Amino acid sequence: MNDELREQSRDYTAFRHADFELHETIINFADVPMLHETWLAVWNGLLAFHKKGFDECFPDSRILGEEHEHLVETIALGDPVAAEDAARSHVEAVWFRLAEQHGTTTGRRADSLQRATAHLAFRLHCPLKLTDVAREVAYTSPGNLSRLFRQHHGLSFQAYLQKLRLEKSAELLHTTRLPVARIARRVGYRDVSRFGQHFKRLTGETPRNYRESSSR
Image: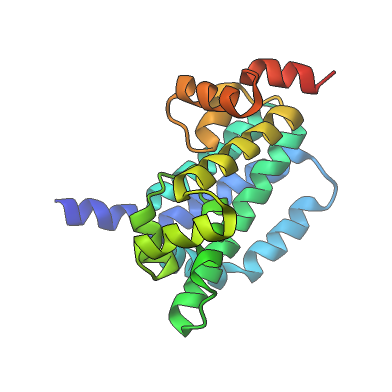
């Protein structure tokens, strides 16, 4: 039964149709002259790439669902800056995954720290553990990766990750109208209270006060 469910969740034909309808709806909602025709030509020209991305870059379909959910909900909020950030992240995530796949299959890998820091920057919203990143991304031991972070950034792996998350959240608080809870989730915090504690520790202000003071 589990194998059957996994196979259904990997139904590329169904995904392609759903993805087409979603992006066509977004394009039509934008109501920009000639945008639909241009997008349709690009879509048809990149179908092989689309399938390759589905097969090789997103083995877990839930990640696709989460990315599209964030994109749609952010656009629905009517905040153009937030929508642009979500769309850019959506596109860059695909290219980054392809770059990771290319590095793995060809053996031309960047150094361990570079691979790890790039991975963190593109995965702030995901659970990230030193052991997993060391083994699956940096191709080194957790101890060595931890040493590299302290040597080059003066921070532990976890402290560096938290710094990235809080810096991104500060950017979103300053430039968008996204709710604080959504920003917290977007940078990897499932507990909004914990996010608020960490943010205040870094900036001296609560997320809401920071947003108010930065907009003056």
